[in-house]
Amino acid sequence: MTTTTLDAPAWAPSTTLRSGPGYWLTGYRTMLRWHLSSLRMWLFLLVMIQALIGVGYVLGFALFFSEIPRTAALWVSTGTPVLNLVLLGMLLGPQLVAGVKQQGGYDFVQALPVPRTASAAAWYTVTLIGGIPGMIITLLAAQVRYDPGFTVSPAVVPATLLIVFTGTMIGYALAHAIANPMTTQLITQALVFLAMGFAPILFPAEQMPAWLAELNEWLPLGHMATIMRDVLTDGLVTDVGRSYLVVSVWGAVCCWLAVRALGRRR
Image 1 (cartoon, helix red, strand yellow):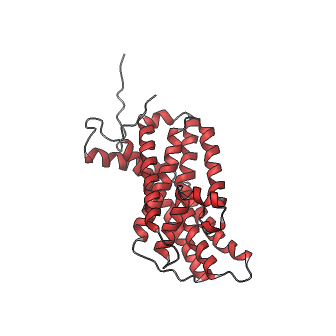
Image 2 (cartoon, one colour):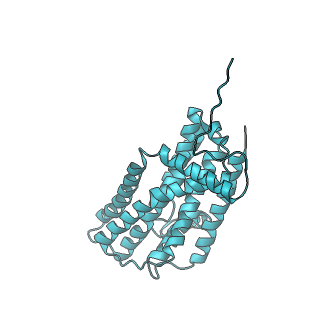
Image 3 (tube, helix red, strand yellow):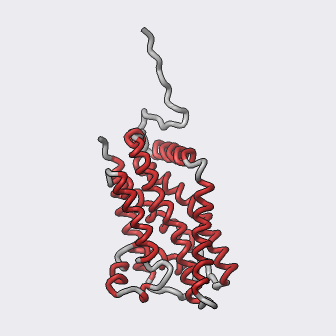
């Protein structure tokens, strides 16, 4: 009787040394390649869908007005890019993980010898790749349609990274902390509804009922829009320090929850 030894794939991280920056970077590259190869047939389409969503909102809101006020144009033009940045991480990510669970491949992915933080960072990178082009196309469409007078600050880079990070970690925590994939899918569908109608992303919080505006003071979506408006305009919003704090805390807590859930073994 003979035995056959199966060699690990060339891209797989070494199992001999499971610590240190080198091991983390190898795991990060492995999972990034894994995600990109898994989405190779869909990533371009996802980017186009994100762009169409953004452009559709920017152009569609003008149909409510015979002549859209400049302030309203600014709110829509600076709020829609937030949807571009968070939809992939907060909604698509959980949907993909739920699909893997339903197909029975989740435990295999869990068993890969990759640091949990490296796996989360890889998916964060994928959401940046998928979300930023849509954001840029949306802003270009808004500039052409409204000429809203953007005043782009250099802080747009760290602001964008923070918004995507928090949106991604919210979705990542939902995907891995909730065992039932059907529950995950239902919650993410509800998030779309809540983001569109009950978060001050495309309109000021002052136009909402007082209790709902107060609730949004503790939720991240409206604050993400405030951060985006701060780096794209001059004087449209104030008190952005609280917004950065709320979004950062949500991102850090959800990252911890996601990494903890990823670290569990069945």
